[in-house]
Amino acid sequence: MSDEEVRDDGYDDFMDALEEGEPYYVECANGHASLPPRRLCPECASDDLEEAPLPETGELLTYNVTHVPTPAFEDDVPFVLGIAEFGDVRLTGQVRADSEDVEVGDSVSFGTDISETNGERYIAFDLA
Image (cartoon, rainbow, N blue to C red; front, top):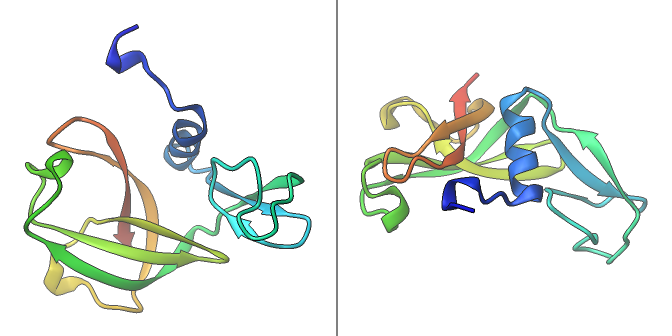
């Protein structure tokens, strides 16, 4: 099996759901929310997890402009990296906008994009 055929089912299933416009998070019976892949709730260790739809828009909580990346993104710089809250969960992703157009509190939607460095998918945000 080549590297291109290796699949991380939990992560890749989540990324597929993002691409298809049907993203989800997991929630335990006690109401703790987290992102897949999970087998246990990170708060209470419950194994009773249900998928719930992720809201279509979120709020950008913070961001930075990356000029010195990890090797996996060396050909993608500069880029805006942000953390956004979508309901009860937070996602980290690249913001597909010029840094001067981005502000904390902006409404964002999510999707996926492809790294110019290694061709792998990553979570991306668009200003909503």
